[in-house]
Length: 513
View: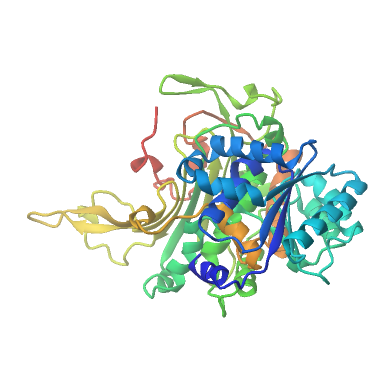
């Protein structure tokens, strides 16, 4: 962020306009506008910058600004309390234009309105279009922008940010790409994955490539297995309708966690720039060993939460949630075992799990190192856990290393201890929200943390056969698990060694029973 700050202070970042389509939606209220306000507070916006909210509601700019203020008090109350005077000036760079996404004439009016504003405020025609709209509207809005000439770069650059899910299958992702590429080139398309905007995910690369004692261990010779856990403490809440068409495989595995895996498993890039880094992550996704239809039950476990209890409170089951089919077969939990078939990772298993209504909210990567070749203190170990490198993404962001030490006193009794670092220990450093970082990266034209088309296709190519097998083979079980538990017990069966199990996340987080 510091390098970006220097560029902004020096005026090296172009003036620009951010247009948010679907500005009255939940994502805009909860994440986008609060993130832009935080960037404004931190002086990380270009000197000439405005936001144009585009929504179907009929309202004027004053009414929209009042709505934004009310939403800020709901979703960013700490910012509003600390910086009330800042919001008074911030809201002056926020504008609103009523736009019906299906109506071409509304985009003619949007163009005229935007050009009038940029002329008045002396802002160049550098535009970011944020599609905070349902995916089925991407093609329609993109086509209208093309028809009215808001895609051409002869008078300034144009960039499109699209939210996940990017397609619902490999075929739909390819089709969507082709439609977007009719009017926008690949360098103009930014496919956002907020997981890649998390500071700890980015720090994986620094941890590996800036330290001489990590990278030599980062291969099949020293690593026994890798676990990636993304647990959510809540259920689907009021998103049952969306989740019914998505499920955990599409919602979490295909995009977020496969992208995280790619960052963990990538080879060092020759040059630390956007293209080189993304080239390496794509290679990982392309090297994923396909899971054949007849192997799905062996390598993938799916589950669905049922009624459970937390602190005496009854948690309803998924099929009792709003807008959910009473006979739904949608998975709310997925655990899978996969392999990256290349020289670095050959035969090293990667275990990924993600689910809803689990005991805690935590995202963590655990690198299990192989044991020492000769276990001199095998009989003295208090347990048989191997050494671990733990990368904590949420909520207590940081890094920990678990290893064995002698217990003080006579003899050679051994126990596991750890050294850890917490980002919260850096009192002078603020951890930016993922959307802050990703929005800022798009403003300066850095696509490193955005998914490229070939990466999206590679992840869909791996996931599609699993989804197809679930749909076509009714014999593949959907295991039920009570809410506030760690998912189906069958997930432990993915480990070939029956003495192994998923790392206990409750050892550092209080799990409410």
